[in-house]
Length: 367
Image 1 (cartoon, rainbow, N blue to C red):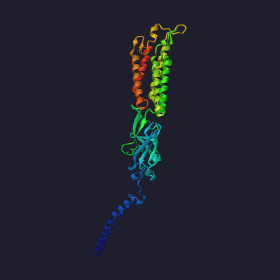
Image 2: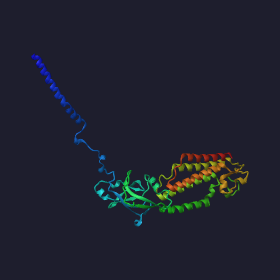
Image 3: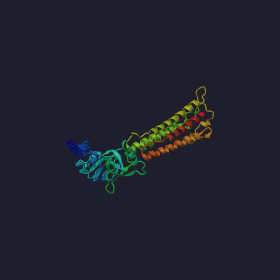
Image 4: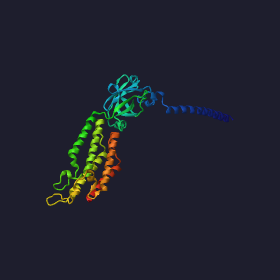
């Protein structure tokens, strides 16, 4: 009997101990679990990028573009290469508080950021910028001053960080007048270009004539060559565009595009091919002189009849290459004047121009 009672009390004691131990496990387990997942408060670090109010890369809301000082006597009229000063309200306080680095600020024109035009502090709340056109900013400059139908292009001015919005501006927004054709080099280049063209048409026009001639035939009576004319067309067009862009922008790098070189190569290849066909196809006597059976066919009539007509009259293969050369040339000139850069033609247009040149050479060789 006593053994049964003892066993009963032992069982009850063990049950009570088990209940007490089990009631403490969740608290201890939770505490241990929390200690494993949550580090001590002193070891917790807040990433610097999450502290927006302390990040120098974000423009403080108190900064505003207030005014711009540019041009002689502050008339706001500038050209590429000139300096301008932009007044930003609250800039000096931000610099003194070290909440902003002025070297990180760039110039904005018409809402476009010029990523390599960084400002230099020059006075109370003022930054100085030089309007240079570089590899990084040439696309922006082309959008701003390219395609202007006037000599002066007005542009809104602001300041901000690269790849971010510009600071708000005080109304009315400060602006500058950019002299698109105000470069002094342009005033030298245009008369020089006109002089070169005059000398060419006065003394060098015979270089476009067909060298195949009848003995004792005057040089000025030789017909004009379509191949040589196309070669000269692309040469003068590209070299004149290069000088025009350089005289305005002052930047000679990355002006000539690969498409322009292809067009120049097509023109040169057409001229060389036509000359080889004439040299190989000419009939010669025992003394090596070229013999022309019909003098009328080889004597120049006028420029357009010489390049568009063969012995059978105006031919379509000549007309085709002439029209496509003029069309692409006009597009070339329009793009240079509009965007201040040589156009990048689609490969289909270049292939079409090459096919026209090949067709011309093929029919010329056959005739």
